[in-house]
Length: 267
Image (cartoon, rainbow, N blue to C red; front, top):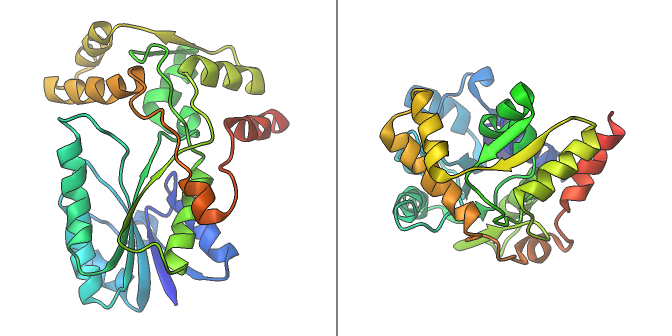
């Protein structure tokens, strides 16, 4: 059986390929490097040929594409789909998330939706975090001392592999979190200690944050979206822990200290 992994060079996709391979499954990486482009339906059929299950990642820029791809996948004989969504609850954002998920749910496949917490590795892999830290050593966000149960992207990947390969997870929405909720102060202080870098987190007002985004050329709508998303972190809306990783994998999720320890060892 062959399992298609979209975004195979991305934050989670590359780990999904590794997790599937480690379980003895055949993973088919799909990315622009392999000639696949989610925004170009002409590249879909070749990627879907002979595929049993697929991992799909949400895209806010093209909200209808995951559902359209899911429908094409089912028509091509794909039986099982896992969709990586987002764990946001704000009334202005939840309808969009649920709308993107609905396209996969209505595809006719055996589906599972994953809503993860913010990724631990965003510190080094997400531009809005990594770029300011690299530029001047200060991550300025309107997130106060809100708490978030950051999840290791490798845990997400292991859950994806399990859900694709095992029965009993279909038709379910899983929220994924790490084992404890941290503030950005705790996370960035830990990163600074582990790497030896002179970096820090600085809480700023939402007004100052939005003003900075607008100065950089972001539209009013985009800036408002970012502010709303980060307000969820400031208000600790996603701080509640779930047991999903343990329930699916039979082990606890990786603590942030494991990733930090790896960075320390790599110095």
